[in-house]
Image (cartoon, rainbow, N blue to C red; front, top):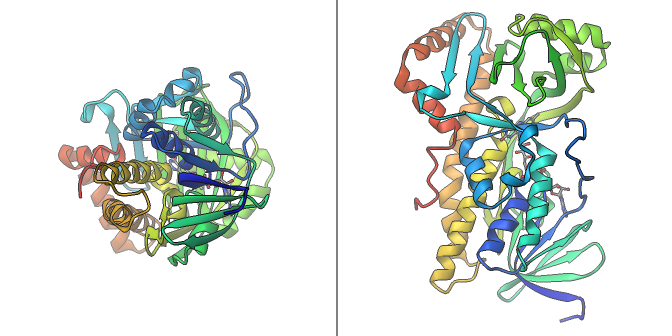
Length: 400
Ligand SMILES: Cc1cc2nc3c(=O)[nH]c(=O)nc-3n(C[C@H](O)[C@H](O)[C@H](O)COP(=O)(O)OP(=O)(O)OC[C@H]3O[C@@H](n4cnc5c(N)ncnc54)[C@H](O)[C@@H]3O)c2cc1C
């Protein structure tokens, strides 16, 4: 072993939205953990302008982040819980209310950077967790019952388990030889912060247009974040048009539900694709978050699924340890994969189905869809089931 080799129980590659809370959770188990992150975000002060990248965080994810001590580190004044969701298209409408479940809120809109920053701050509560940043994982090798991660500075981390939390283009996944399958959507999502004539009423608004869904997500400062998924050609033109043209397009496409759209911050874009890893585990490697699955953002589930992955992996490791197993043993990884892969595939497939159904101009399909939305709106138990699923209440990581 060279002088620069250090030993850890778990090495997490990727200190993003999923990898950083996972490091905190493994730190709570008393494990020696290295978290390797290539690019730390600049600090976000409490009075800094709001970030354009926000996520809808489900109550189940909020609960987990609370138990880890991460949620209380985020300034409450920057978080926006929402109580209702209004979803409509040209023929039907469905209204989800927190009172249905009943609960106080259906989710919370949070800036991505805020979650990552609060999670990074929480790492210091765990003596066993080391943050190595900015630092890149470059190579992965195996030696007997250990994995070896070589970093960009040449140092080597020896570990029982490597967690790939390095996002959709995961290099660790490729180095572990795990193939993926999927397809492009020929869609780009545009995100921006906007001001509207009328208040958002702590409601998440989503209209399904033939081109793709347009969402207005409520923000704590009274503005909304938009996520507008359009075909690539249309999105490119919306990214280039002057503000006034874009504002008018938003006003028209939202059917003035919040009145006119008055102002808009910088527009940022994300090409959309569907991707799923053929396995969630390789030799002494586990995949979590976007490294394992990439889904359409229409239901705001991506990072929430990533948190369910992290919860399940921690649970599998905890159970394995209670039986004297190390975190990278096949038994642990097999259990983790059984807990998560089928659930995630089902969610991903339903997002694909929704995207197809709502993007289809075939009159039979649009008739069915509209009958479905109107009918669903009258069926309290169906709406309750959908809301519970979206809130993450259906997930149970203790299941085998
Ligand atoms: C338009 C849009 C809207 C969305 N809205 C929602 C929403 O409302 N709700 C929701 O739940 N999800 C949403 N998502 C999905 C969500 O953003 C992702 O699921 C989430 O960011 C994935 O987090 P992650 O930590 O797995 O990956 P990432 O956030 O991609 O983090 C990966 C990290 O790994 C680091 N890294 C990469 N390679 C290396 C390496 N070799 N060495 C060291 N570090 C490395 C990167 O620097 C990065 O910090 C949305 C996505 C899009 C595109």
